[in-house]
Structures are given as C-alpha cells and as structure tokens.
Length: 485
Image (spheres, rainbow, N blue to C red):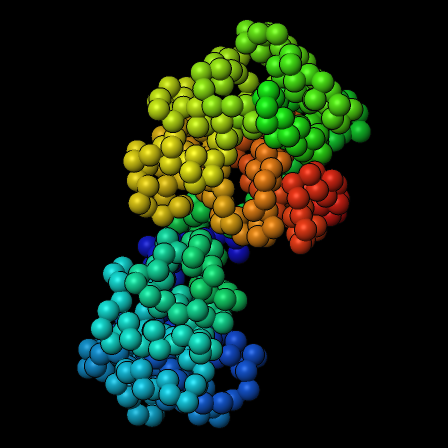
C-alpha cells in the first residue's frame, strides 16, 4: 500500500465506495473496530478517555468507545460540541453509545488514562483554539492513540496547525496520507497502522494517485542489472566534474557511481588537481583539463552519456559554463550543490534549458536560492517540489529526512528510510553519484532518483552509528545483493 492519498482523494475514495454499495455506517463501524483491535493488541484494559470531535472522526470515536466498553474496558467519552449538532453516520454512532457523554475538557485526562484522539481528522484546515487547543495540550506526556491523524496535524502537508499531540499509535484507513510521512507529521504519528475498512482497491483506478512512499516496488522492475552478454560500455560511461579545491566531493561521487553499476566513470578535473584525483580509486579514469573549453571536448565522446556537475565544483561563471556545455552536449545531467548555487542570481538561465533527463538534487538552502518565490516557498515540501519539477521540466530531488522526488508530469514520492546518521559531510555527494550511476545505465531519471535515495538510506542503515560518507559506497554491494534477491 505505497500509494499516498490526499485528503481530497481519500474523500473521493469514501464517496466512491459508498456509491458502489458500501454504506457509510459500515465504513465507520469498520474504522472503529480496527482501532479497537489495534488498542487491544497493544495494551491491557485500563481507564481510557475517548475524545470525540464534531465530525465523522468523532463518529469513529463513538464506535471505539462502545466497542471498548463491550470488551470490558473502563471508558469515559467526551464530546467537543453538542450531540444535537452531529449529523449522518456520526449521529447514528452517537445514538448507539450507551454511556454518558461528557463535555470535552482537559479534566477528563486526569488520572493519566489511555487517550483515544478522535477530535479532528486529516481534513482540519485551521489552527486549533479554545477548548480544543487546551485538550490537545493536556495530552502531552500521555499515551495517545490517534484516529486518522493526531488532531491538529494537516493530512496533506504534515504541518502542525497550532498544536498537535505526540501519538504512540496512529490508525488510519485504506491508505496513508502525505502528512503521515512528511515532517514534522511523521514524528507525531508514532507507529502508523493502515487498516482495511472495506474500501476496494478498485477505487484507485478512478483516483489515479500521483504520490507514493518510495520503495523498490515502484522501480525494481526497471533496475539496470548487468546482463551476462553485456560489457562495460553497455553499462554507461559517466562523467563527474571535479573541482580544484574541494576534491573529496567529486571523488566520493565517482566511486558511488561505479558502485551503483556504471561501467566507466571519468573525473574531468583542472590540471593542477590531477595528482589528487589520480591518487584516488584506481577504478576511476581521470582526465585533466588545461582550459575550460576542454570539458566540452571530453563530452564530445558519444559513449559518455551522463554527467554530474556541482560537488566541489566552485560557485561562479566557470561552473555555469560547464553546466551549459553539458546541456548543449545533450547528456543526461545530475546537477547538485555548486551547479545549482551558481545560478542563484540567474535561475532562469538554468531552468529554461533543463529537460526530463536532468535531475536536480538540492537541499533546502540550494532549493530556495534556485527557485525562490516562483514555487511558493511557504507551501509544504511536497507541493514545492512538484512546482519546482513543473517549472524546470526536470526531476527534482529535495533532500532531507523526508526527501521528496518529483517528476515534471506530477508524479512524486516521499522517502522515509533515511536515518539521522546521513546528516554528515559528503553524504549528498554520494547520493548524487548513485543517481548518476543509475542514469548512465539507462534508467529513467525519475526512477533512478527514487532508487538512489532508497539505496542511499538502506546503505546508511547497514552502517549505523559512526557512519561517514566514504562508508556508503562500500555498503552498496550488500544492499544491491539483497535487492536483487
């Protein structure tokens, strides 16, 4: 269940399911039962406070309270609003609750009960205030089970609308939403359980989701495994532009490209840095450049089919010229670091000349310098990355603990397997090199970016604490072996 549904798409899934003959009442009963099963599997019966909101999420809460009571749990139920204001399936669920309905107030949390947060679902669009805010603030430090999302968390963006609790468990239904995996939402949801409540997967045919959680099921069938009758040139010849001073970046990227499967990798470097690069990995070809024009000559070899520019290249006119040469040579390009920052003042000069064979790999700072207000920097990470891909016509890989990769056609994935140890110098250079190596082998840019990010994360997990960037390429063979099965 890798697909992620927006709040609007999930509403459509509900509507389509009801139109196909599944009553909303049964969906609500199934949702409540799924939460109760999850709670009973994790905790022994003890005092529980079920907090119900004024909408369908509150209706789920009434079902949960009734089923827990029937299972022998001591339950108190509090409603935000009045019972007479409930409508539809939520009103019906309230009628079936046999116990008292208390007014929502932080006092119900005295005694440290297990808290079932059924106040607000993913569709909440404004910050919590008043009693609702006070109740959520009172949840701090308590064990909370969130229904759909923790109240106050925006389901599409993962942003907190004023305040939201830290849940130990979040039970959502049919499919996750972007807010479950984007930060800070992911840190607030705790364990996320996706429950089957009777919505058929066939509704996805009518929705055609464009967002997913990154994982091998999305791109494994396109992975460029070596062929028995192949040769090194069939696996691509990648070029990495090396800088004069920050030589480690290009060296890390070139080894990573080889580990990712590129048949050959050449580092094109300034003449004065030749000795440094030549003393590195003996598997990497080094071509010194006496002048800037020689980079275009190196790219004139048709067998050199993919280029990485940026890591350690230096910011300025020289890097801009090298990027222009690579794009003019019609090579698949990965642009990172200095190759992006070099266009901070003249971003249109870059963005107007990119194509779908290009991958941009910025971190947040580089992203802001390159795209600025043109993509709505105040919007959520998923929306910003999609807008950047649309504006540039390239694949955009916006790095972070919740890396988002977006294609110009609207497809996007959110990656969730990046451990904190990746926050170390050089890890981004390794990632860019993995993307390069996969593209050099003929993998499409979007799928290559997705695969590279996942491989990067898995390699980091195998290393664990103490990771430094040069560990990552050496961990790739084990990850690839497991991927190949």
